Image (cartoon, rainbow, N blue to C red; front, side, top):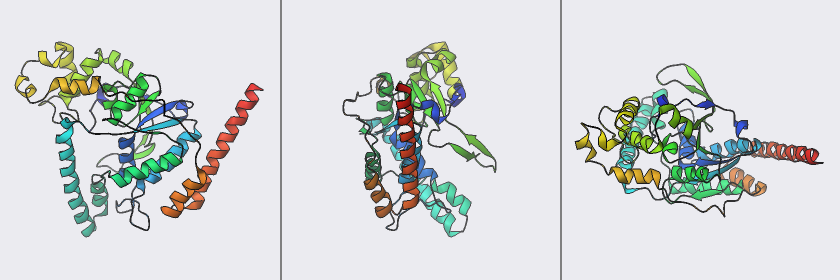
Length: 341
């Protein structure tokens, strides 16, 4: 879902190369969902191999991570674990929306309304066990660590920045800063042009960074108050939020009353949720071990075999990108040798 905080932030535009030399903790499910949503065929269908297996996520993970590695960025993917029981409502809502959009998608195809079909297709995405196993395999072959979070992937990724193991969290959702991510990078996986909804106009999409402390200082609140704002607006753990309260109203109320419990006229709505449990999810996420998080060498031949022989990728394209990465790494190593010699 993602908490709607964009209007209250002033993100800094960055380039991928600005993250060179850094470890970045990537919200895995969020990123996989992006690839499955955006990498699609002419009628909105996902990319598939000759056996009918979806490959959109593999395409995204391979080419995007090659770019990151070429920029000397060290990615870590953090996958969701067991969801909180408080997420039952949002999980059920997503299922209902997905089923409804699937019906509309097939109807649009039947009627030859391709643009409508493409629009509906984006909301039919489901991440299943096969897709997750595929993702783990390609990342392993690329030498990129994968962490299975105890619960929320965003929380575990944010924790890695809190202990300075990673420099930034990568996600599209602002929830990361509620979880304590020191720095959040958005649009790292969606760089390019994006059409403005319901228009024929396009905008440039560039990576941007939101710093937690800067966000808090600019809005004159602390992190506890940020979490209370999120609860007022609506989180994955109380998706409906509070009636007629958006980001700007939430900020105004929290500045004035400091805590949700002090706000008048919302007492009845407040009784519907376990506010302290939601706060606890954001403030006390499960810690994770970092001693086994190691970046390794790409297993080039196995990776080519998996993508090309097993999943029908173009061998020439895959090999070309791997050769480019290899050359970049060689040039970087030679430059370092010259520097120290």
